[in-house]
Amino acid sequence: MAKVNSEDKFEIPVQEVSAACEAILFACGESVSIGRFTELLNVDAKVITDAMARLIQDYETNPWGGLLIRKIDDAYIMCTKPGMKKVMERLYSPKMHPPLSQASYETLAVIAYNQPVTRSQVEAVRGVSSDSIISRLLDRGWICESGYLDAPGRPTLFSTTEQFLLEFGISSVDELPSMELMSYKTIRDLEDSLEKAAGNDDRQISIENIMAENSEEEG
Image (cartoon, rainbow, N blue to C red; front, side, top):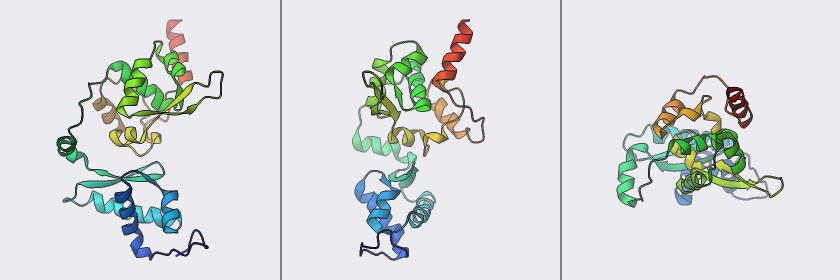
């Protein structure tokens, strides 16, 4: 097996790579990038992706297990199966989040399809203040502050999070459905559309085309 760093004396047999990746994910308790795996195990990325593909398949086909391994962008994370949600709620007794409003889903849609995006850009699309809604989405863990726009005042940029991908059941924002998110009233509506999204029209929502459509309607 080719080493990534020839000066690093660490070596691991190829048949142990899957087990090592599984142990790393369990110990970390958070997502681990492919680059981090290659650094830790001193093997190339292809070996890691092949090992992870086997692990993902093993976890998905194990009817007795309560865990899954998910690929999120260029990283992997170990998580509980969706069917374990009620058990996890009993374990952690989390505070109950109030249902999100139509406006909240509209705001989430604008951010998801245009990220990174500033608060003023979100408000330009929606036409109203979004301060409180953005705060709720931050509290929910679906969006985060992801930097600053290189413009006067350096406004904060917002993007969706790994938590958003996990809860919506997708591996990347590239898997978002190319359809009109603005009409969604519940998270179930969005989840249903994600399941049906493959092979649909490639058009995505953008700030520019929404504002143009709004201008045409007003005209």
